[in-house]
Amino acid sequence: MKVLFVSHSSVIPNYQEKLEILASRHHVELTLLLPHHWPEAGKRVDTRGMQGKGFQIISAPIIFEKRLKWFFFPTFSSIVQKVQPDIIHVEEEPYSFAAWQAAGWAEKTGAKLVVFTWENLLERFGWLHDQVRARVLRQADHMIAGNTEAARLLEESGYSHARTTVLPQYGVNPLKFKKKNVAGLRKELGLKGFTVGFAGRLVEEKGILHLVRAVSRMDHKSQLLIIGGGPDKDRLWQEAVARRTNVVFVDAVDNERMPDYLNCMDALVLPSLTGRKWKEQFGRVLIEAQACEVPVIGSSSGAIPEVIGQAGLVFPEGDVSLLASYLDNLAGSASLRGNLGKKGRARVLANYTNERLAIEIDKNYKILCK
Image (tube, rainbow, N blue to C red; front, side, top):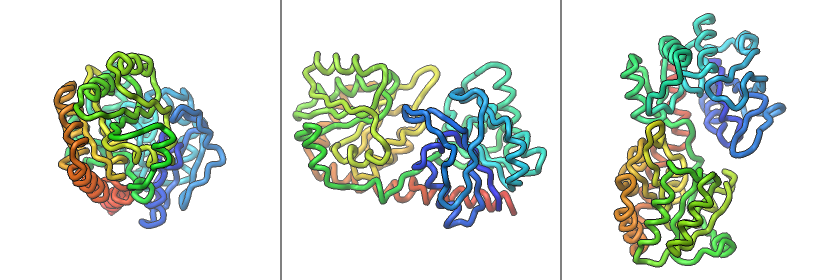
């Protein structure tokens, strides 16, 4: 079985782990197509010369770098002719030109088309992208939705729900993300006592201002560790100073170091807020924290409740008082923290490892190629 896998976000080597598993343990002859360059995690990644572990990587030029809806590969036809795939698997949204390219060549060659989508709000990008989306959905043999709301949108758009799998784009490596002693790093960061954590983009829709306010209302003395960068950093700092809340800011952390920083936290909170054009599509940091046995609290925005399940706490988005109460309960009970931590890791091992994702993807491939 030959698979051409198209995914701009796989320019990050850690995000290629499920592909390594597919190639090595499930014997898929896989070729990953990447742009020559792509901005990711604050850096412009150069993929030329990048080597896959057990699979081939083709690095190719693109038109419209940085533009998710518009970018495409001018040499796509020659790549398809070289690989001769049985399946073209595209991790680009159905309204994107990259997905449109894949759909066209799947039709020409008879290859099966698999398309991934996070889209849990139906955005309108104009007539052209609406037509692209409709074309891709008509051609797709299987859709993978990153959350149940995305699957529902596909059904409402006329795509058969029976041909949709709900599965996140990336999983967790439980050998890397696990509970560990990080007393040295906590000391280096100046963390003492109960530590509430957040990791992600510092933007309004992530609801971090509400988190600062919740920590300031806690009965237990606590501090806040905020990891990430973004336009709201100064505003968050000013709010913390005004409320006399102890906050430690750390710039974006490399994925290899993230397990250490997550283990500095006694609880991780994702307080996202739903807007007119965005709501939380998954919240990868939730499963990374759960894998480290860090208790998680999330708002009711988008996919957060389905990701957390019964292995954490969920509050109505924007409810600062209830969030503060949940944090106080965790701060005052080591047994509650331990119980939620164990439940969280068990949930990740059952649902969200890269091995689990690879197994489900391989099942879909085998069904398509019968």
